[in-house]
Length: 123
Image (cartoon, rainbow, N blue to C red; front, side, top):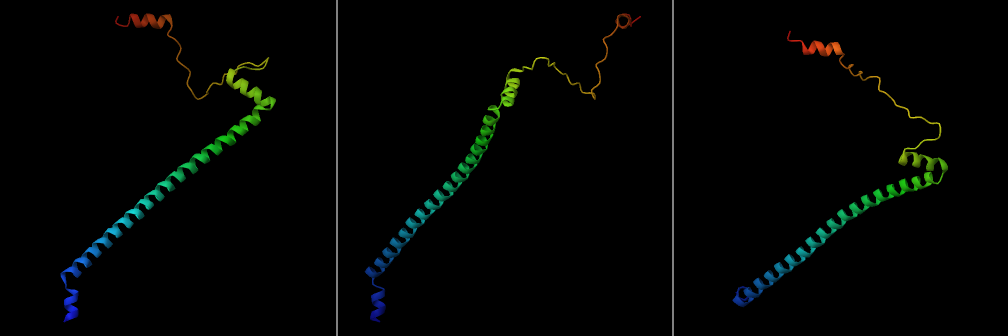
């Protein structure tokens, strides 16, 4: 009986409840720290993916620019760049106009007689 009384003493029960409350507070505090670390990990993973994509884009641009530099160092590349930028040609070259054969030709303009018939159509 004395053991049962010792377990049910009000002071002892109060300390047990305070201990449980402190333990609950500690669990909440640790849980909040873990959640914060989890969010930071997700954010850093997202930023890592974005930086990897940016690095891939910059690498592609670098290789393209290196190719452009290599082509501009040759005479043929310089000539192509000048032709493209200023629309110039070599001496003796003429402009070639390519006509699409699938398009229908425009109708001929109306003749003087057609216009006259149109004017006097009411008659």
